[in-house]
Image (cartoon, rainbow, N blue to C red; front, side, top):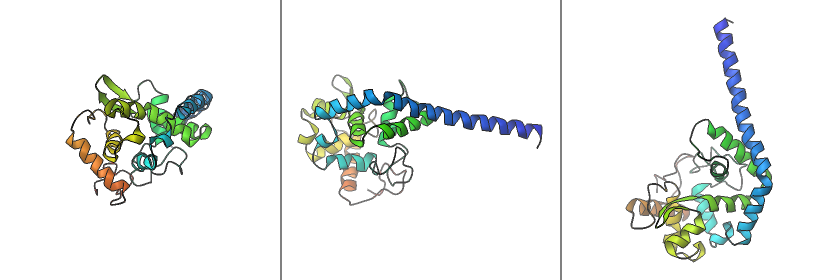
Amino acid sequence: MSKILKYASAILLAMTFAAFAYGGKGYFDALADADTLALRADALISDQRGGVDVGEGRLAQILTVQDPAFYEHSGVDLTTPGAGVTTVSQSLSKRLAFEKFTPGIRKLRQTGYALGLERVLEKDQIIALWLDRLEMGRGPDGWMVGFFHTSDVIYGRPPDELTDEEFLRLIAVLIAPASFDLRSDDPDLDERADRIARLVSGECSPQGNGDVWYEAC
């Protein structure tokens, strides 16, 4: 083996080790945060701001769009049709483990943190924390965060009291909160909500893992 090849192999090995170490840091950070996060999640659930509180059958609608295999995976899902590259646990990790998340190498720590969350929290705790930290777009008083908060700001009612159309608009905005507008008529948002309505009713199915816009719907 030439010196150049040996040098390149050593660099590749070092980079691989660093990547695993960075992902591992995320995992152990989640373990360290577990007690605080569990208390926060349990408080939200006690305050009726958990997954079961969005309305009968409606958490299933959210997960059909955001993370269809949420109850089956352990934090990562790269195969389920329509799931995309980010699970609910990874999405929550992005909000908990970083002051400002940008794609790239940080995905490793995000994934490690998600695996850690799945190790130490119950699924209902993860859902409660996730719903509370979701970016939901612009509101009358600035940027909105939180599914329940946004429901109250935009519609003046909790999610379980919304019409089906109103509820699906809240789900629809999640994919592009900076582009869609819940405050007024938004044809693009309404089209997205219509596609989701057809998806959750079983009229259509995603065409592969990356089909998060539901081209067949």
